[in-house]
Length: 234
Image (cartoon, rainbow, N blue to C red):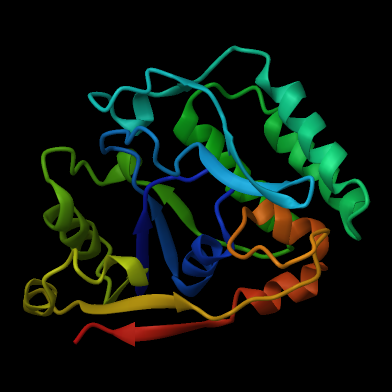
């Protein structure tokens, strides 16, 4: 069984979705401390044809709080955010199909950040007509007392995972020998070059899944999810 574990990110880039797709089971790591100015509630879209960083306001965003303790702000950000998306993507090829999905996600009444992100993953994969097994780490694993690598290994053991898949940027975070000692193989996912037509003079890579959805058909996105390489940790 292949397992992947990541902190919950809202509207992340295509590589995050590739990781979810590559695993048999995906664990949302929500019983760890929130990281301010991380990617949990931020990402990038096209605004006026240029790279723009959006940020969804959340309450209790202290690094002393766990992600599962954070809540979405009650500020009237939803209407403004949807208007920004509409104004900048209304001429995209898939807007008519995709905007209602994004609107449904944004207007979800769930206030808890972790559950809100869980819901948004469900809706995106539902739109893509794909099934994915996603589990919040806080729901069953009870590993709050463990940190970093030890937490990951314990979740892998509980799931009897043979492979643990992580983004390529995490190659320095893990000790291969400790995973091998538990009969777990480390693999790192490297996203291949993904290009598509945008409303921009020059292609802007690695934007939010919102951008990918707006300019590509379901079938093309499903093909994108397969465009990665799994690398063994040396």
